[in-house]
Image 1: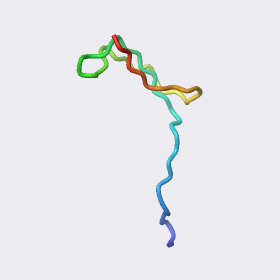
Image 2: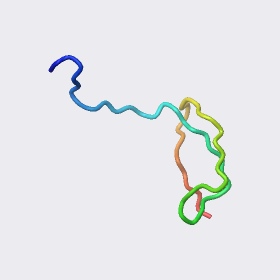
Image 3: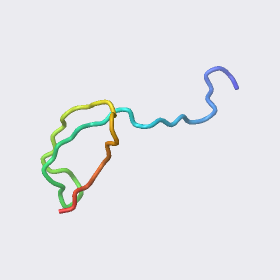
Length: 53
């Protein structure tokens, strides 16, 4: 293998988490009144959740 060539992809886990606050989900699956609060380092088991109403 020559210089600068890779053997294959390198996968990593998420390092940063976006904090978003919102009021509700629309019928077509979009956030209603979403507000971006910032980016932080991942310190916990943050996940993505959809709240059923």
